[in-house]
Image 1 (cartoon, rainbow, N blue to C red):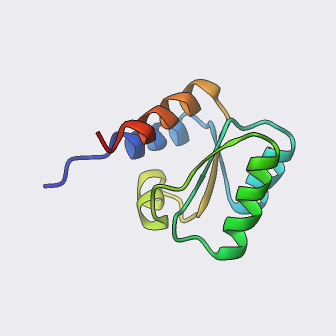
Image 2 (image 1 turned 90 degrees about the horizontal axis):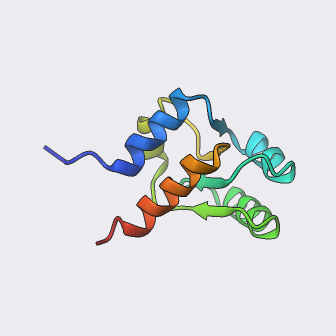
Length: 104
């Protein structure tokens, strides 16, 4: 049995805590309003979505995570989306930390 990924487990908790913005349009709007701390984008998202969200995140200095597929993210959150935004800075910090240390 595969060991559960701590990042994906925490992402599920973020959703249950109602600290997640989902869907490309809502995430773009949240980036513009600077109401999210990190953007999580599926690695297999479409090229136009990938460009639009990564450019917007770069412009507004919002961290971007693209380490997981749409299937992995959907399974963790229970929602079939490619783009997510985390509102809570504490959750965002921990998610970034988990992504940066997952290869060790």
